[in-house]
Length: 96
Image (cartoon, rainbow, N blue to C red; front, side):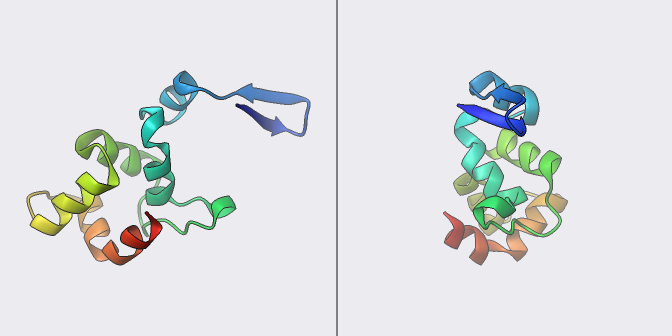
């Protein structure tokens, strides 16, 4: 996929390696990543207090939003990111 960075004068080629290098996550998890950190262009508000780094850390630890939700619901996980997810489980379920 081509991603215009600056008009049409600078264009990045976006593929699996681009997503891995830029965000530190497998490309298959980008949808979950966008839901967690938010993406205004797609109308996703994100989980309050979760940015790029926390979203990537949670996805690398739990594999997907489903895994993160399961950990938050069972209480088996701790940490600030999981607590923020626990607070906004309704949003995450709707966003999927």
